[in-house]
Amino acid sequence: MADKQFSHSFPTLQQLAADVLAHAKKMGVTATEVDVSEAFGQSVSVRRGAVETIEYNRDKGLSVSVYLGQRRGYASTSDFSPRAVRETVEAALAIARFTAEDPCSGLPETELLAWGDQPDLDLYHPWALSTEDAIALAKRCEAAAFAADARITNSEGGSVSSQQAQFVTANSLGFMGGYPTSRHYLACSVIAGKAEAMQRDDWYTTHRNASALNTPESVGEKAAQRAAARLGAKKIGAGSFPVLFEAPLAAGLLGHFVQAASGGALYRKSSFLVDQLGQQLFPDFFNLSERPRLPAALASSAFDNEGVRTRDREVVRDGVLQGYFLGVYSGRKLGLPTTANAGGSHNLILESGASDLSGLMRQMGRGLLVTELLGHGVNYVTGDYSRGAAGFWVENGEIAYPVEEITIAGNLRDMFRNIRAIGCDVETRGSRQTGSMLIEGMTVAG
Image 1 (cartoon, rainbow, N blue to C red):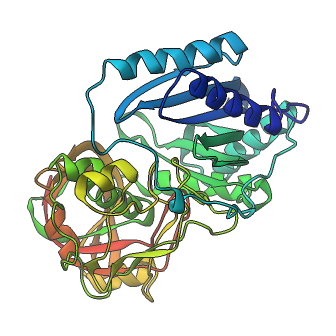
Image 2: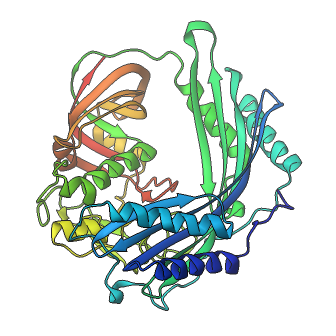
């Protein structure tokens, strides 16, 4: 991909956005907001030393929302020709004419926008990676897995991906902002054992800057270790036990919290966290911060999808819920100010404890370490939680044997309240950063 570039320059995207705003104004709309984006990349995978897939992707899109008073219309296109751009604006306008008025619709208040506050957050690091070099990296990743343990018998592949994107967000208040981004990863998935005794596992590393990725050898070795450790897995009897969620899965629990605390679920009354601001939801050592402007982080942004300026904030302090995740519209529906989360959360960081994963197992003593979750058994209305799981049974603070084909169940409200410790073994792979999480008293069934 060393010779690949964006099809359109950043000033061209800005001009497209300006053309949309000008045509919408000509058509007599009250207000307009527009997003223009372009992305490209390549992904390569190998299996058993042979190339399996080589994929190139190139995407672009333009979306526009227009307002006639408090009636909103939306349309989008992937065609950047002048005629298509005009027709997209006109399609949005036609929709707005038939839409019911909504007193909460409209652009953000002017003072909320990121006027002149768009620092370089170091989010763009293009990777001059040729297809041949990508194949070589993927092969190194897979080869390291086979070399790490003789019990690795098969592979689902080593893979490499490099992606770049750029976007512009603008509105009729005069705001225009945007920037390029990049994201790269290395991954490996392998199989240990034979016949009915086979087990699989994987590992990956991701970053905006390819130089910060873990080595392909370390990724392959980690995948092999995880797969081999699961050989001889057993079922376990039913009961109530402490459950230790490995760090990547603990990040998923934070994701469930974000979903339940997001504006759309709240104003629709489809969340168990309705009317919980200021309430103690977690133990008093639980502190969750949002840091939108961390340099080079995977979820950093100077403004949200509506152009609203992002700010550092404390989402949970001493276990007490301090704020939801709101955009302008959901905030108005709830009678609350936007938290600049239109489009999602930004770099949520859970304060770590002193113990690593081994220390948390010692603290747990006897219970279940979960390293894989299956299914989607989460009810955000009630908080009920039930997932298939696999991992390891822990006795006397140490792994006794691997387990599989089990179910863990509880209620998110109780699970949050019964968190006993947060580890320092943080794996940063997305918008949520946390160590492993120990929860007391979940129902486990074999």
